[in-house]
Image (cartoon, rainbow, N blue to C red; front, side, top):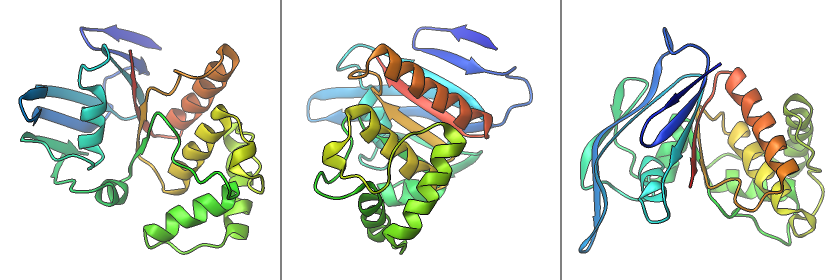
Length: 215
């Protein structure tokens, strides 16, 4: 394990030598009216890596995540994914590349079960699967990654940490290659943070890369 520290980030992973560049952001800029949210941002993230992006509130971290995920379009700059320049125009585009964003507040329907939420989300992407089938796969994911979410339970009965885990399951079922987490630890207890990072380490050991945004 090693830690590299610069002005904006910590990198956690194995030796950087020989690891493929997954995400390369070059000269990214974004303005909202008279407000400059991002100016000439460069970022590189390699395979099997957790890259922690640090910055104060309002520094543009979430804007960067939203651009990579296709929620916003940059005013200038390029994004390369596995060495190929990509034009990500929507979250659906991002997901097609294997990029998934877990936002600070889980986007789930409280009156539906975990499996029903996942099935509905997949349907919107043109992926048809029954809650029963998804429930079976969720249990397999639970066992592999140490997640403890009952697919049959109503989302309204879940803790914040469990709702966050549902979003992680969704990303896994979408075959995520790059997982972006926006302020994932803000509302977690110390125990829940340890559990989250245990899950993330398993994701990285499986070949995935993670961009974790915090302050």
